[in-house]
Amino acid sequence: MKFKTPIPITEIADRYNLQIKGDSSLIATGINEIHKVVPGDITFVDYEKYYGKSLNSAASIIIIDKEVDCPNHKALLICNDPFAVYDDIVRQHRPFRAINGQIHHSAIIDPSTIIECNVIIGPDVTIGTNCHIQAGSVIHEHVVIGNHVIIQSGAILGTDAFYFQKKEGKYKKWRSGGRVILEDHVDIGAGCTINRGVSGDTIIGEGSKLDSQVHIGHGAVVGKNCLIAAQTGIAGKSIIGDNVVLYGQVGISQNLTIGDNAVLLAKSGVSKSLKGDTVYFGYPADEMRRKYRELAALRNLPNFLNKKKK
Image 1 (spheres, rainbow, N blue to C red):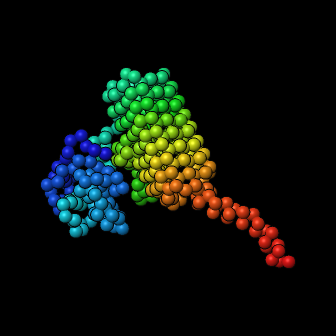
Image 2: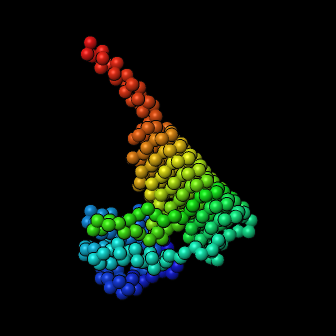
Image 3: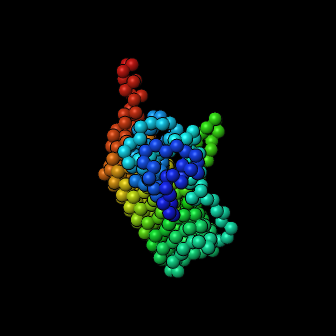
């Protein structure tokens, strides 16, 4: 998530009464989770085992719950509750705005795009040329839609990230400050749901096609020219390469990477990252031929055991 205007770190420290360690002249240009950060970003860490990953990331400013050595050219903002400060910064710069009409006045829609009846479009949505948004679709805030995109009836884009912090036995909801980006020539099937990122972007790459009732989790990235069949679910932060084919009811866990040109057959369950240029099947998903050999061996197991007894 990028700020509309850069913010001096001293301004953030003053607002939340935080101690600065490191370069106090830094200017924050955005805020992001650790896996999405770029130079100029703020991130946060409140578990010691993740200190190294955060301190060595591309982020320029780290909100942290303990005073530690600060890397060169970075700054630490030290406080008791880094999550609360991080979440409040997101809420401050992406405040909630209810949809009180059919099309929000801040939406930018090219005149060549067809918007059917009962489509709801929220704040700061951008829709390019020659798109077709079918009846009953809902497009929430900060969704960016390219050119020649088709969104079928009942699709819901930009829903909140399914992301909570558990503290003292209760779940606290994060403010979803990220976006959904659909690149050119994307097709979204009926009843699809696509969550926006917590503070980063959920991206569907150019030319990719989603069947009906596909769910894309927060911050996931789908590459170019992918085919995703019905009832597939991709969990948050996973990255799908280019030209990937996912057959029906494939399930992909969070924080995984699927390589370019991979094919996952129907009902496969993915619990670890998979290399590209390979066909996979089963749960847990594995190379198709190996999985079929395992199934064949399993079917022959009773005969083998009977022969062994005799």
